[in-house]
Image: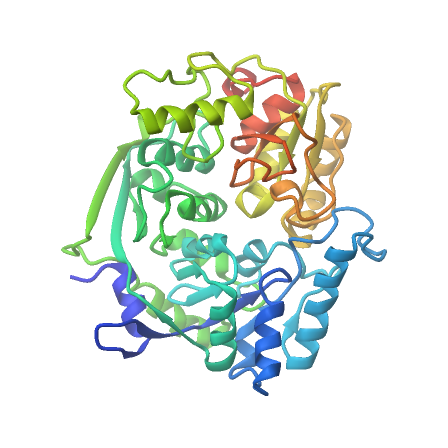
Length: 464
């Protein structure tokens, strides 16, 4: 009567500290340039080598520019961080996919697509959106820099065991509803703290119907509900996706791995600490109106009013709307926007580009829109070109940039100017997240494309 989480977690416990944390073995550590420098410095100071270097993969993504990657980075801070990662990886004998390496991209996009992320693994990275990898049936979560050092030194981590939650979404998803909309819907219901302290397993017909890319998007956003991580039991969709990828098991190893992966599901009588259910029929294309990902609504709805809110809630709500330049009770449909961003570890995969192109096809980019279309990796970039999506997008007036985290966060050149509105497929809409004073409306790739061709917030179903 174990949950999927219990099965993977228990298989990785090295020892338990009485009334304390668990020493958990880690199968894969991903390192990017922002949260690893202090960890490497700590290792050097103590004269330590990485305990299992073959289990660690490094790549820059947050600071990489999305143009002219073959030239030196202009921003001195970004350059220093990217250079430091290359040097640290070389010094410690670690795999490093640097800029312009065809294996480079956003770490949470590259891990699954290269077959480095596999079912049954424990995976960590100094990045909150490590929860993405749980879509493959892994226990994956973000850690702090001191914990990155702990894993480098011992391939283990001290962790308290989280509680378990199952979110079941029954029924079929409607027209124009993407995995991103499912996530934004759940957050609008549960708030950004509704899953705090839990590891979430997603289940139900609507979840099973998602492609691997959709599942990665959904698990990516688990952290935005306060969850420690999110996961989906591996099935034929997962196995089909992994088969033949660069680092995936081959031959006899594949058969052995597959037999094990097929056991990775919650038992029928498994007991979760909390169960939550939603009906897929209630989910529409979503958009956020505030300054946290839980402030979302169906695109055809109006912004809520302050009716029934406590004084504390009211103050926070009004501050948020004031920042966004919106009024309680008003609709967002038809509102003019300035920027559209397709990309990030949330929606920078091939399926997201297919969705965006399906709306852009035969139409033109609106004159008032600056659009940044950023593949999550060079592999996604190659797929875009193989499928001819680049031609469709170019004909519509869009340009495809080079891979990186881009406008998800203001750590590189792609910043939204103060006061401007951006419909963004990324994961966070905090004040200043996309640049000081920027105003972010989170949405899925179809809604982003609809805004890009009309210049205003538009229900994508009207263009499908």
